[in-house]
Amino acid sequence: MSVHENLEHAEHAEHAAHSNKKIALLIAVLALFLSFSETLGKSSQTTAITYNVAANDLWSFFQAKTIRSTVLTTAVEQAQVEADRTTDADGKAKLLKLIDGWKKTIARYNDEPETGEGRKQLSERAKEAEEKREFALARYHEFEFASAAFQIGIVLASAQVITGIAALGWLSGLLGVCGLGFMTLGLWAPHLLHLG
Image (cartoon, rainbow, N blue to C red; front, side):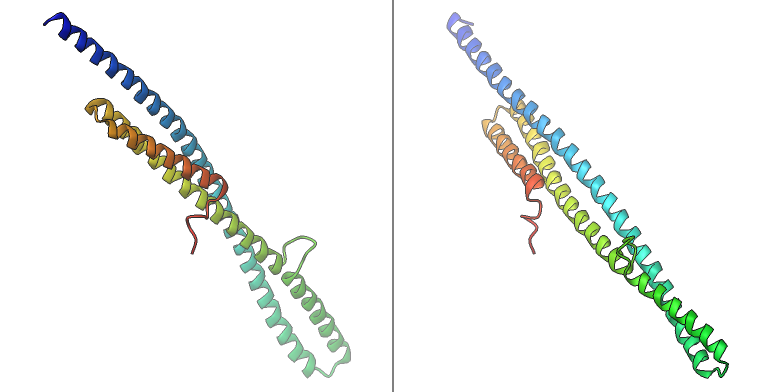
């Protein structure tokens, strides 16, 4: 090899090494953002599961109150029939007092703002938990899209090192920007792409 060829070969190797350093930096940045999106995604997924369990618990409590209310309503109706039939004034007064107590209990089962455990309050709380669950799931999906973009970007950047095809590096960077866009949506506007 001539001196001129050796110099040319050294310049080419130096240029390739400099290019590989840029790609290595790109891969490191993509991996950093991948770790952020994975952490945020896992947090959103856990939040969604927590609110799903809370909503299920509240709806179960709501159903239990409904069953109790239905049983008492049936008992009131039956006791009212007995009260209407009885000729004993003392017995009728006792039945009417019992009916009145049951009606108050039924009303409390339906609306109990002091404890937040009336059917009305339980329904509102369950719907609120469902809304929070849906919000957390929307965030989770955006973070998953971001993670996929970062992962594919890392693969393409790695392929650029091997093949030397510069377009793969540019495409990798573009996917990184897309990943950042999905992370931004996940943080501040998770429902933006899920309208309808």
